[in-house]
Length: 84
Ligand SMILES: [Zn+2]
Image (cartoon, rainbow, N blue to C red; front, side, top):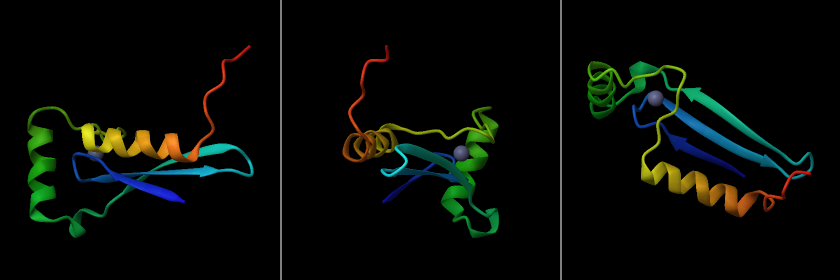
């Protein structure tokens, strides 16, 4: 099962997928095509760029996105073990 979490700028989506067979977590950054953005997303993107808070290779998450990532990891990945 994949989880898709939108970046706060509206430009990308973070995709998380845990592969139980191989026990690996895939994190993918998917860029949205700008011509498919809503006016709200375009405004947000411009606002972040004006404030110097736009990083094209970063995913920016606020609390809702952090919650979604946290719940995905808790529900779909094994509990952490202390490394030896
Ligand atoms: Zn972004």
